[in-house]
Amino acid sequence: MMGGEFKEENKPEPWERSPYELGREYAYHHRVSGKAAAWIVAYCVALICAVLEGAVGAPAHRVDAKGNAGTLITHPLVVARSAAILHAGVCVVFHILARRVWSGDDHDDPTKRVGPHLPVRCGPLGMILNSVLAVAFGTAFYTLLFCAFNYTSLFRKPIETMHVAAMVSSFGWVPGACLYGFPMTSGWRGRDGGAVKTFWNFWEWHRVLFMGCNAPWRPADASWFLAFWFPALGCWVGAMPIPLDWGRAWQPYPITLLYGAIGGMCLGQAVAAVWAVAKWRSDDGCVLGFGGEENEREKRARWIEEVRADEEEMLARVKRNDEYGKRRRKEERERRRRER
Image 1 (cartoon, rainbow, N blue to C red):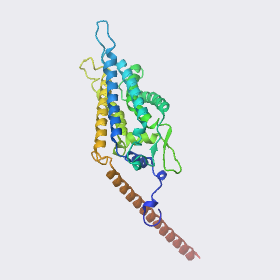
Image 2: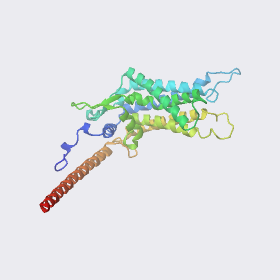
Image 3: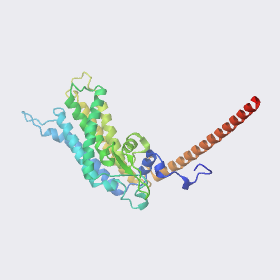
C-alpha cells in the first residue's frame, strides 16, 4: 500500500485495523430481523417487570404489626436486593436463550450474518460466572464512586451503600458480562478462515459504553448502553434532594437513589424496545441517522480516504526526509572539500 494508488485489494487485513474499527464494522454488519427485534422487546419488557416487582412486590410482602404492607420507603434494602437478584436472573436467562439470535446468526442473508470481527458468546455457565464477577467488581466500584461523590461514607452507612451499588451494578454490568464476557478476560476473534487474533473483552465494553454514535446501535448493545448509563444518571439526579430541608419521609439516603436508579432503568429499557422496533422497521437499519448499510458505506468511503491521505502524507514525509538527507550530505561534502 506504500506505492502508487490505493486499491481495494490493498486495504489492511482485518487484524491490522484497530479494535474500534472492527467493533464498528460488527455493530452495523447486519440488519435487525423481526425475530431479533421480538426477542429484544420481550427482554426489555421482562427486565422492566423484574425491576418493578423488586421495587413494589418484594417490600409488599413485609407487613408490620399494624397490617400495613411495606414500601420502598420503609424497606429500601429489601428493594435493592430483590431488584438486583430478579434483574440479574432475568438477564442471564434471556441471554442464554437468545445468544444465537443476538449474535446476528438468524439473518436471512448469509452474507449479513457474521463479519471478520465476531464476539465469542459465553456458554450458560460462563454467563453465570461472568455475571457474579461483574456484580462483585461493580459493587466495589460503585461503592467507592458513591463515597467519592460524598453521597455517604464507608463508615457511615456501608450496608446501604453496598446494597445500592450491587443493584446498579446488576443493572449495568450483568448485561455486558452476558453479551461480551467480563472485561478483564480475552474473548473475541475473527472468523475469516485465516489466522485468529484475540482481543480483550475490555475493547467491547469500551466500544459500546464510551464510543457514542460509533457503537451501541445494535438493539442488544443499545439496551446495555441504556441500562448502564440511565440508572447511574438516575442515582445522580436522585441524590439532589437529600441535603434539602424538606423533611419528607422519602428524602433520607438511599431512598432517592433507589427511585432514580429504578426509574432510569425502566426508562432506558423502554427506549431500547422502541429502538429495536424502529431498527427492524427501517429498510436498511438506519434510525435517526445512526446505523444502516448506507451509513456504513459512507463510513467505509471516509475510512479509505483517510487511509489514502495518511499514505500521501507518509510518502511526502519520506520524500522530504530524503531531500533533507541529500542536502545535508552535499553540504558535508562541500565543507570537507573546503577544509582540504
